Length: 137
Image (cartoon, rainbow, N blue to C red; front, side, top):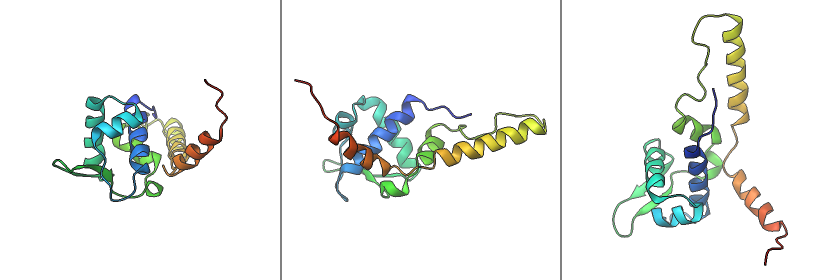
């Protein structure tokens, strides 16, 4: 059943960073890693998976980097979870137990609805976070 790993959390953070870049600007892994506060080695693995799934585009070379393949409003949190948590939305009830199987199918359906949130919501959260008073010196 659904579990959110650090890998998925980092993927969302990286997609958030990429979403701040004006299209068609490319971002280097180093830039994304610094902005999202992720190790470059781990981030590289994540970006490759997201690229293979079609969420990212990449260009090789000195002027290369990564960019979103589509706007954040078209990328759902559920999509990212499905890509990185391969069995996240599978029914954990592997046997034919009638009521139990139906129960877990309903839970799975509700979980998918819950995670059908576009990543563009991150922008609203970013704006709200800037409005929060910060009294650190």
